[in-house]
Image (cartoon, rainbow, N blue to C red; front, side):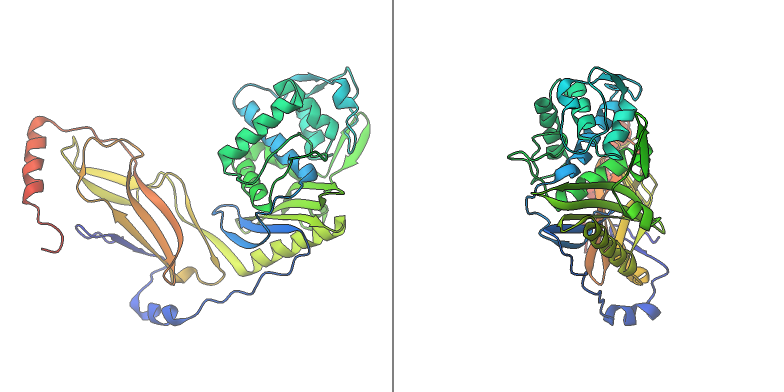
Length: 389
């Protein structure tokens, strides 16, 4: 890392020097087009960066069928993390939950079932009855639970989603999109890694009945570890999948395929395309010093700057050595400075195209210095020449 007074800090990855840069700048980056996917809508997204690698009709509002349950499970996980619910809590099964049609966990009216078992019934067995039981236990009724689902959707930035029930059975004004489901899946994996492992479980036994996970990719591809299938006549065959290969995770969403086999094949095609032609790298670690800034009128003269979280870049495969990063630091930073204050940016480019951008923040707070330090620094700041003079 090279520091220049009153100039950006320039960082070059993998010893990018003039002898290699000339040819690299001239070389054109070409990536094959994504495969043709037979579906109403689909998307392929990198988990760490959110970069979309392939999409079609990704913002078209579609019936989600049991993909709805991804949001239902997300809401339950949030309630557990907030301390409002516990895995060992017992849920009394209502008449409504028991008689809910479609795929079932086979819970019985009046029985008490642990939250953890109901969650597995939703995730692995896609039980509509288990979804309703959890919704009623958490919110009192399914309508109120749907309101919670919509509040979380809005918070996550799912701009084209609206939920009316907890299980995805056909109902008016109930829809989402491939992009919104990718955003939701990204949040679920990131926020609840300990619970996410249940999405890779291939079978679950409850009430002496063994049921198998309908996600065929769990058996076909050992790198796939989730997430959820869905089907209704209106929605067609749907699947949200996620796979982790060589420290890169991808999320694929296929909605409205023609058969169970087709939804699995199309997701596999998307995942294989992404892993074959793209790579992801963690370029900087969060909460780690990347640069040092001068602080005026403070109780200390220097302040370490870094990122709030890790910075990743998703790029066409084979172009890691062409990445360049520039750190821009604000001029004349004056105390007091609170930890987390934005004081610059980190921009990563590939062939002059921005591939990643993050705020540079103060890693610690700096208080005002004493009156003598403030007077001295005020004088020194006035004597400093503006840039370019």
